[in-house]
Amino acid sequence: MILGLSQASQTFPTKTWKKTFYTLWLGSFITGLGFSMTMPFMPLYMETLGHYSTAQLSFYSGLAFSATYLAQAIVSPYWGSLADRKGRKLMCLRASGVMTFTLFITGFAHHVWTIILLRFIQGSFSGYVNNSVAFIAGETPNNHSGTVLAEMQTASVSGNLLGPIFGGAIAGIWGYRVPFWLTGILMGICFILTLVGATEEHFKPVAKQKMESFNSIFKTIPHKGLITTMFMTTLFIQSSLMSISPIISLLVKQLMHNQGPISFVSGIVAAAPGFGTLLAARQMGHTMDRIGPLKVLTVGLIAEVLLFIPMFLVTSPWSLAGLRFLIGIGDAALMPAAQTVLTLVVPRKAFGRVFSYNQSFQAAGGVFGPMIGSGVAGLFNYQTVFLATALMLGVNFILVIFARHHQPQKQA
Image (cartoon, rainbow, N blue to C red; front, top):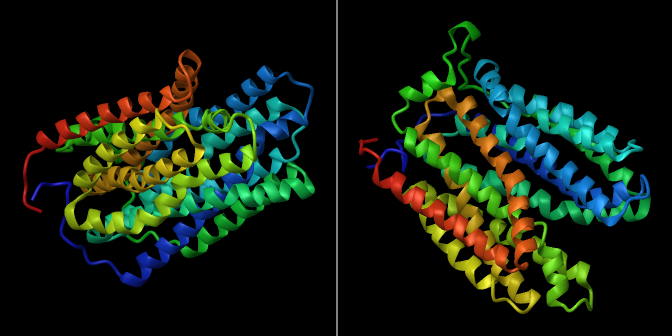
């Protein structure tokens, strides 16, 4: 059996780790809900704070969006080191606690630069979803890792699907500030839930003076190439998800010839992958536990490449929505599979730092993805972004195949 594809079962108290899983799932759902209740309306909120041209508004909103991911990429390694010394629960409390205040205060902003600064601070301390994944990965028996990590993905996806509906309704009735205040309150509830309901039983703290540097630990890990490939996979997957975001509504507008309920149809097209992910996540998790995450990741990358290519030829928003729904099914396999591989091959003493570096790569994808999408669309056209994304995932597929073929074999 190839190490990293599956491992033997461990003995964990069922009641404890499942309670922690439910708590962290709900916390991740709240985080995803809060994010999507506010971010889609950020440009509209900024527009109420002054008189800006379209170019200025696009620049400020893009800066506010990227600031969080940029800050995450910079500080995640530090938080990972602290996680190995103090535990992952503290990292979840840190993220939810700071987000409670930054989001609530954003609702009182009177200038765009205040929002951008708060977004950067939020990014510097955020990371609840990623830390909750590392948290539950260390508490879950290995024979349940694929299922649990796949279902953790459904938490933020579900929140991201429902958030725009609630946020739009609330903003329409009470204004754009109220969703930020409500999200701040929700993150406070998330903090309390995590404090009370999540238990970290299998964490073994490492004293600061005894803590090895990440480089020295990384040298002792037997599957360095595989771990590095999973870092790059996380970067490519996140970039592929974010590359489409800046142009979806514009492409839908073009396909509908600027006629009809463009906003409504754009919402359906944008949400389609989330529905596919929700539908497939549980089955993908069971499949990972049965045949191994690397096989699932490999097949998922092939499927995504084959689905992105025909998007270049779409002439109807509904065919685009259908293909994006299928993309969502593939998404249910990709990120959880990469995280599951890391869970199985990384020593527990390095969990925090490895997952924090993985978070940095994911954050970098959140910065590079929109830049790639906007750049390609500006040079060519909207549909060409799909070809560029297919090419990016094709390169990722080659890297994964290379990593698989160069892994030593070991009995679990």
